[in-house]
Length: 444
Image (cartoon, rainbow, N blue to C red; front, top):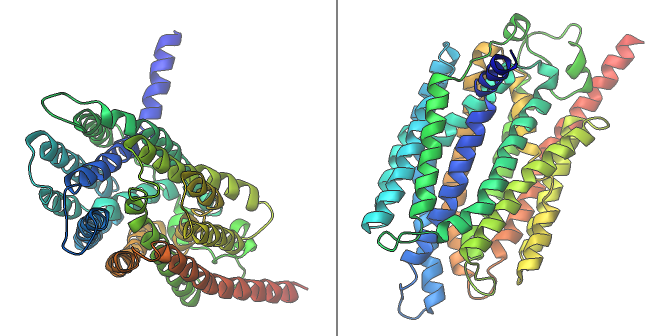
């Protein structure tokens, strides 16, 4: 009798969103390390007149990633909006299943590049295929939509951070093993074949799980018909008396502005961080790249624990400010990193850096009915895409031009922009405090 019950429990687990997140993130972390090392190897012999071999390689690496990431940012915009619209019409699995197909094809693309020695530029075509499937712009809002619809409005920030926790823990595991898997190879096929084969297999399993097993949860009628006031503590537990069922346009605009600026700062720094660790004085190996990526994924865990601790004593806007300050300090230290140990010190200071974005997403989702949740989160994601279109070439060119005299300049600029992004959140905090005081006076 115990065996059928155990099978039923396992089947129930496989129908949840978490196995999809685990399989996709494992595949993605393996792919990210593989791509980074393949790009390094393919650009190792490039030389430009008047520049050292390392400067030439850094320019080639950053130029590749600039083009590759711009394609990934631009091509998903329309497909992601279409998939979000389908989601809000009842096809909740569409923004998950379709992008996962693109994930699989892009992984197979890099595998073919490695096996057959094809030009690295073919990865630009793989990026186009990935983008036309909706990419991360459709996949992650789809995941967040299912997570939010399966929870009460008051608990959405916690639920979304739990999703981020699963994502982060999986990333730590995948990153730790990715560098070692990269070194396993067939004498006839070369480095990365085992790593990319495992990555492709994981993405195939993920796609099968999403199509066959994933269960779509429905939001409650209460969440579908009514929205909650933004940011105040009262909004977490009770509806505001006399508040019309509309969107607080000013607060939502401020949230979008803060998200744009913060993503601009974080994305710009991360854009060059992968190239930064490959040059001297760090000159990381494949295993060290995996460890560094694991440190980045570990921030998901510490940010989740931070949400659990902070939400008991501070408001959402304060939690966002704590996360932004954490990133600003850590990335400032990164500006002066010259050793691997100091790199990890800077990463340690970033321990709450992932709190802002899921908290902002949760707050935005509270302002719309369940029937419009998908399109709202996707619009926010599109705002972040616009930020990416700007910061990718900007930070790349700044890094290339400051490579010889201050390669950490981009991190210093990122720290300054992060501080600026705290201003809209501070304004929201003041507005929320004034509204709470008004409600209190009216109650008296």
